[in-house]
Image (cartoon, rainbow, N blue to C red; front, side):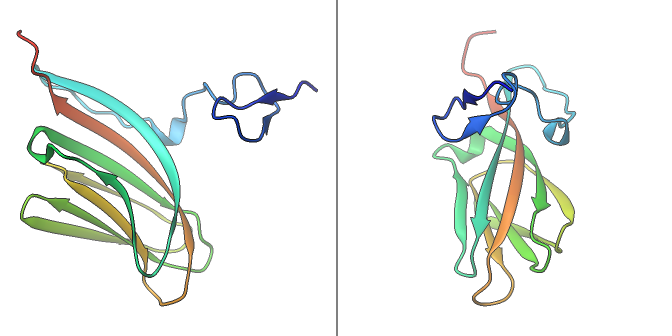
Length: 136
């Protein structure tokens, strides 16, 4: 079997298309309005009880998003805090469960475990729509 180095330089891939294949779990269907540019990406992170910031925007008033959350832990619940300007929303996702949140004016996404001293793997799938400043 052919071994190939991943595009990020870490680990070995068993399949040449492994790093370039679209993740079906992160394929978020959304309609992008005129004057917006759409981008989808996913990331994995480890949630701690003190919290980890996984996304932060310097221009929050131009970004809206849908975020799918997958808690990869078998034992620990997580809280996902999403800031939008002066307001904040959160969603709790149980062990081995999924959740989603949609928000306008995305500023910050933070993940944390509910119980002290615990860790949890988290996969986040982002569907961002950002205002385009190009002339239409």
